[in-house]
Image 1: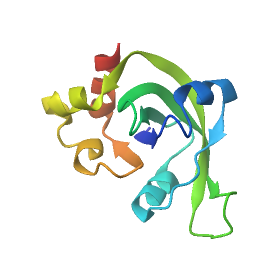
Image 2: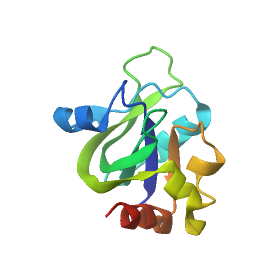
Image 3: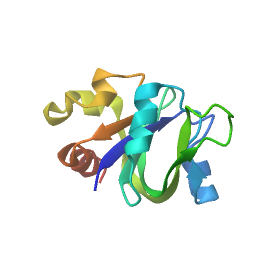
Image 4: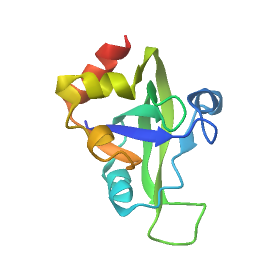
Length: 134
C-alpha cells in the first residue's frame, strides 16, 4: 500500500463537503508531477486530506476507491482523476507549522514542494502525521 497527501482549498472543496458527498473524483490537477502521482495511486491506498491556503491543516484520512481515469471536466487527455472516499477525521487537525517543526517530517513534499497538490508520503511520515492528529 502507498500513502499520499492531497490538498484542497476549503472554500472550493472542504473535508466537511467531502464527508457529505461520501465519495468524489479528484479533479482539477493541472501539474504533470501531481498527475503522475494520481496515476500511481492504487485502489485501497490511504490519503491524507489537507486544507490549503485557509487553515493549512491535515484534517482527515481518505482512501482511493477507483484508480485513475480521464478527467471528466476536460477533453484534454493529459489529465486524469481518481475516486476518493472519506475514512475518518483526525481528532486534532495537524497544522503545517506542526509538520515543519517535526524532525521526522522535514523532507516531505508538503514542506519541500509547497505548491504540489498531490504528493506521495512514506509510511512512517503518514503514521507520524496520524500520531500527531490523535
